[in-house]
Length: 484
Ligand code: ADP
Image (cartoon, rainbow, N blue to C red; front, side, top):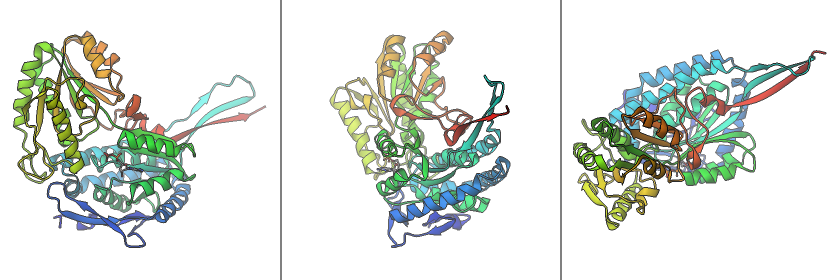
């Protein structure tokens, strides 16, 4: 159905023990294209027994994979990187078909996803231990770093490739093995990555990709004593649940959860740069990323001008099917997502906010929503507290820097924050005062493979990417030897 250069990247089976397998009872569930509502694939609804089999295979594979040198693992991971890069057009086509983001964004995500493999393939060679000066003359103290073991990853639909490689690349580079459960909306990109991993020579059982009922798979993975670590990206609600499920076996966990990103525009900001940053950080992936701005906090002196300029830019954003040229805003992922966006807009209007542009479902129909700018938004509105996850920019007003920081921090979340000012003293004050894991100054785009991605407060635990990201997959072992 999809016009791919290499149709064998389109898989409707799970990657289990190095083989493409259906569910033993043949059960499947459909994958739909959110732009057209068309069913594009049927993928396996695995039973719990298949997940248990995957765990046993992973444990066997781990014993061999951890014995390889970091350099040997690097060579294989580099091949995976090269294959992803060579096949980026097909991967992007699959991604747009199941996720909806414009093709150019899908291509960007494939490059971003691949960059984690390139980075961690190299970082694997730099897992240094330590020698500690001993307090006793007859002892030698050494710190070894060893792979955690069998890991599980549960990933969301908004970045169907990058959320997998950001976990799998450091895990595999460190000598761990991983079972990935992609989101039910976007398994096809995951399978294509799995096919390329096999072609790259990643051994059977080192990377497995399973689909089915999220609860069933989550239960088997979290209950297992063999699985030593869970890395999850998704909603705070499910993150809390999985953390509780991991408690009985005291699994190590990394959680990348929801955000409520503030974007502060001070009177002394470069307004054109702020509008550019606003569009980048708010409307990428139709507003469906956990680092997307959720709240614009704009100082009184610049409020009207910023609102007007932002609305002009937002009116020019073309909405449509992501495969069509020039489209910048695709559909939302499903009907629930559209309903949430609509409820946030309605609630704001009911409480006195004013829609400057957009505000409705788009004339394309289906899951398309108009990019929207709302002014006179206040803290009592739903949009102030909850992640909208859609193309809606609400503008709050503030007077002083102190007030802006207090408003920005007035949330249980702490993932990403942005602010625009030309004043360098204010830059340091605000950067230090924001209770967020990631802060962007005079930019709306901050993610890359070399920087630590993660949240404070209820936005998560742990960091991904960067030199810190590999620590999540390593145990520290203290080794003491007596020479006396
Ligand atoms: P979203 O609302 O953005 O879809 P979720 O947190 O529900 O975010 O989903 C993120 C990932 O978590 C998906 O892979 C989904 O299948 C998975 N998931 C959802 N519920 C559970 C659960 N009870 N146990 C394990 N995984 C789950």
